[in-house]
Length: 191
View 1 (cartoon, rainbow, N blue to C red):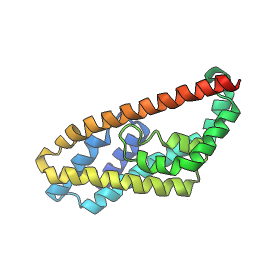
View 2 (cartoon, rainbow, N blue to C red):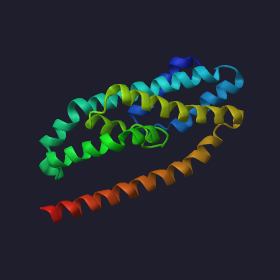
View 3 (cartoon, rainbow, N blue to C red):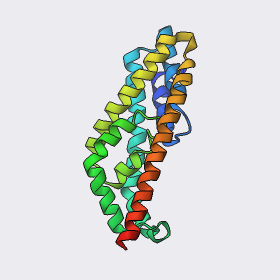
View 4 (cartoon, rainbow, N blue to C red):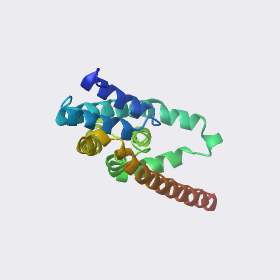
């Protein structure tokens, strides 16, 4: 990152969005360290990281939008998904999806995954890009700022963010499991 500068930071964050196991909580505090040494300017580091986040999110959104629904419909019988189920989830995402996109851009693990339902529900690209940019900029600024404030101890950001992200991810999994159980029970009752 230090030799590739802002394009390197943007590229790393783009890859982090496409391959979620690469954690932004490692990359962004390091960028903050470079801010503390004067190698990076805070504003430009946030802009570069946000640009990488946006491009990665748009790639996933575009793939889900173009091929996600037809793929789910093709294999829907195996997954026990009907077109009516997808229509209902689209309606739900149309109503609440903006908040999910904005909020999940600040949740480790869910950051790039939220692009899939946004694409499946065909959320307008402009709205998706705006919400992704805002949420990503807040997340990026917080982690770069924390890394900058800690200087040589920038790795400690991961020590704080790690347990919080675990709690958020477990809560999200429990919520999704509850919604899934409710959905399957309702579907059985309606059949």
